[in-house]
Image (tube, one colour):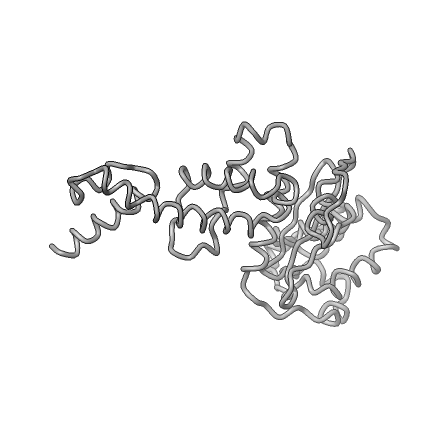
Length: 268
């Protein structure tokens, strides 16, 4: 009985911190006094959540400044209170919320910057995995590429944009934010991953993006090569492979069942 009553109090207290003045009326007959006392806790909670958002979205912070982001974070917290005590994962819904936030409409690129900030955090928190040595695939015959896939490390995040959002995002997260925010109407792909202790970023050519995207889907190496070949001559691919392998993007060579091996889409 006591445990149920305690749980009810904790739930009511959480609701009160989120702004429900009547949530604790069963425990505080004098509502006015209770609300006054709660203001201290509410301010502390709001600051903690605002600090968490600012730390998790540095590119957004660089564009809008601390005051704007703090106010937005408080409004976000009202509709998205943290689901757990640790705030390390807090803010996963912030990019989508920002896309619907009216004051952000004049900055249409802001939600995409927030999404990239979030992908960086996901890569940072992803499980560790030893990177695959380049020679693991080099000893295999080309025919064998039909029967294996390359598994990326868990931290790999891939994204493609119609504009130069990746270049802008990388610049905003650098030591000195750019004086002018410029977006070009050119498609850009970005790879975010953590091969060792530090998160890395790399703008990818279309061929490398197509190859990695096919690998993430679990397709055979042969199928991934065929996808890349629609963007790059085969003669130039060894350089692309060397760059990806030396970057620590892959974790393992995975054998495929014969009946499930992906065929070369260029030779159906």
